[in-house]
Length: 77
Image: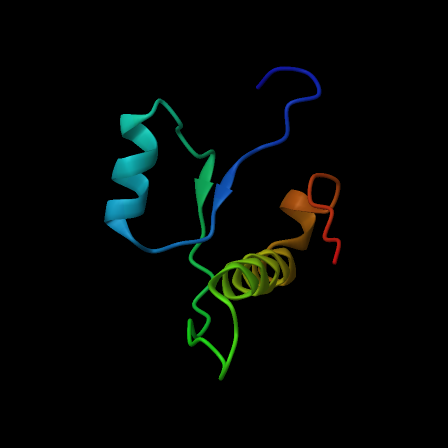
């Protein structure tokens, strides 16, 4: 891995999502499914839903694998 390049972790178990990334030349360093419920809340906008899920998945993966990514993951809200 190049200096200052953070690893890419795909927090999805979806084979299709991995396939789509590969089609555009992106190869995750790791695939670690977050296994969270992806249910939209009442009156939640799609953009808010996507942002909430991305934060929840990042937190989930961080908690599963702190040693691996403690210096590479910054969660902000």
